[in-house]
Length: 272
Image: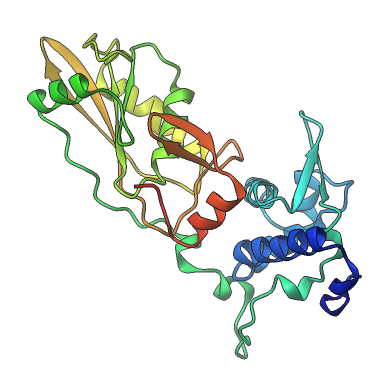
């Protein structure tokens, strides 16, 4: 196993990479011992279900942790249908102690006690107010931006969920207008608000981890019903995943977060 006092024997570029991996690993595992156990169980042969069996955790929680570990470059997945997970070659050389918290655990404190409270529960925050008809017209005229997304009626619920997952990391939250075309044309919704609310809430429950809370409102604009999906401001604690990816919104587009951006999120810095 590679020791830190032996790093001088490694090339300078490898040193940088090794130190970066240690930093990333510490960010996502120092206060999450259950995630560290998942990382330890990754051996190049096990699937998510098998790792869940080894660690005694629910497979969905394990998949979430595996996604985080993969996003920061500590592990890799091979295969698409039922992937097998393996550690990055450099990550295999790093001892467990470098990812652990430096805090001394008091007597009687369990792994769960060391998990940050914000990782165990989602605190709901009040969302932005639903805009008036006049405000919707002004937004449609100005076009999409960091906080506003337009979606034509008929778009798949999964695409709406993907937009929500990215906006959840916005410092000010955001709004998705269902019934406004990309060019700002007011076309109207093709379904009642209650029906879209039910399908979207189910999609968010099944597709975004940890759980997220949004609200839907409706506004009549030029005789057309526009459904407004209001995403609350980021609470600077939760880091959300959609289909095992951490997403962020940059301007009018959604991107998978880079390693630096993921680290920034875990440090409490969202998109403005």
